Image 1: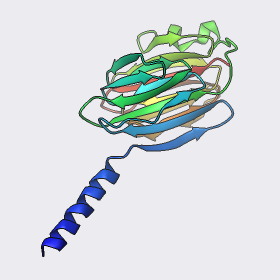
Image 2: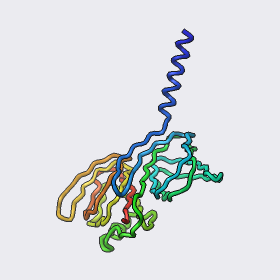
Image 3: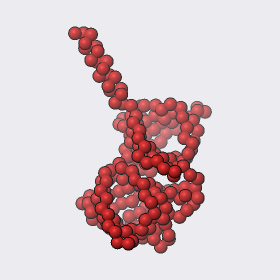
Length: 221
């Protein structure tokens, strides 16, 4: 009986350990980006590694991470849920999540050098057409990263996305999208989904009774 109890305890411990491992998937990969959907457990350290390309990190959960670099120096990063952060290519390091809950991160790896291409024609730029809804977080020669917010039932007029883009949904989506040629789409997606978008001109309406938020990463190449 004692042996059976010990075996059961070992099996439960092994199951818990397996459950606590980080998980990762690749919802999008093409010649422009690779998007990793990663969930990291608390106090779980990575192996020494490096990131050879620039990235945009979108954190779906609040958290804190500690970094130990190959040269011995250390640093910390803390973020809020829904926050987007620029992460340039860097040296060898070990990372450890210091928060007490798992953290889900969407990592957008940028495969091409920046070309400085404009995300939209000036007159149709959503940041100018609907400045209340589109708020620029940061911009460089590779990306323009924008936080987008729609109140319940709110719509924005016709605007243009001139480049490819990655969007990370921070809330459930129930939209009516009308293109410049009159076609109507009604996308419904869940919070945490990540999508790939190509150039488009359209107007949008939030059909939900709930507010809607997303992070939009316009690629400038």
